[in-house]
Amino acid sequence: MNFLAHIYLSGEDEEVIIGNFIADGIKGKRYLNYPPGISKGIVLHRAIDTFTDAHPIVHQSTSKLHKNYGHYSGVIVDILYDHFLAKNWNRYHPQPLSDFVQDFYALLRANFTSLPARIQQMMPYMISDNWLLGYATIPGIAKILAQMNTRTKGVAKMDQAVSELVIHYDEFEAEFTSFFEELKAFCKVKLNEL
Image (tube, rainbow, N blue to C red; front, side, top):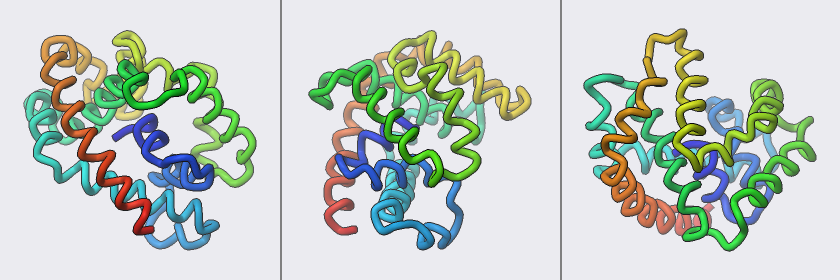
C-alpha cells in the first residue's frame, strides 16, 4: 500500500499516523529510538507491507504488470490501490478526502522537527503538489508514476503503467475492493495487539 492507505489504516492516534508514514525510512531496530506511538506506527506499517506482499489478490493485480515492469509491479500496484481508495473515499471515511488530507499535512507541519531528513525534504513537494488528493484522478496517478519513474532514472518505465490502469481499470478496482476489506480487518486486529 502507498501513503494514503498507510495513513488511513493508522486510525486516529497521531503518533501512530506519523510512524506509519515515516516507516520506510526507519531501518532495522531504529524504530525503538522513537516514542511508543510512533514505534507502533512503524511496526504497523511493516505488518501492512508483509500482509500486502503475500496476499493472493495483490499477486493477481501485480501479475497484470509483471511482464512490462518486473519487480516494480508491486510499487505500481501500491499506487494504483491508493487511487481506488482516494476515488472511493466516501465509502471508507466520513470526512471528505480534501479535509482529511489537509489535516494530515497540518500534522506533518506540527511535527516537522521529529521527521527523518528524507521526509522533511520530500514533504514540501508532497504538500505543494497535493499528492494525496491527486491520487483520486487518473491524471494525478499519471503524475505520481512519472515522478516515481524519474527516481529510477527512467529504467522502470513506471510512467507508462497508467495505460494498464485504464485497460484493466474494473479488474484493478474489484481486486482493491476485496483486498482492502481484508486489510482493514487485519489492521484492526494488529492495532489491538500492538
